[in-house]
Image (cartoon, rainbow, N blue to C red; front, side, top):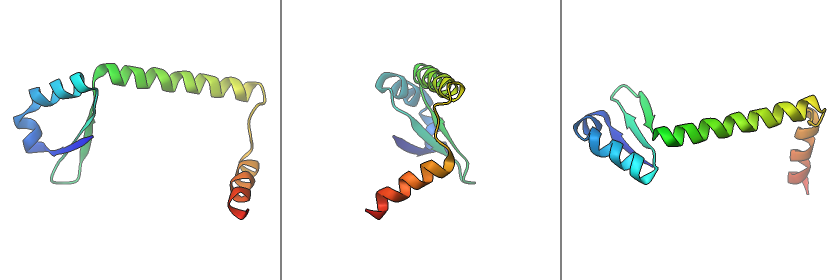
Length: 84
């Protein structure tokens, strides 16, 4: 992933869009006042969004079935790995 400042990105926007779409990469655009955005292809956005929706649906199903771990149990498991 590359990062570009706003001026560079503005001056080469078409080339950046082509690169993002052709190489399936993201580009970070930054401004002088510390604001940033990420440019990604619509295909990548749709894949990512669809994957998140699938994962959320699965988690919700696990919760409905009672297949979840409480925060205390999760914390205890993590701590026990570092104590050994």
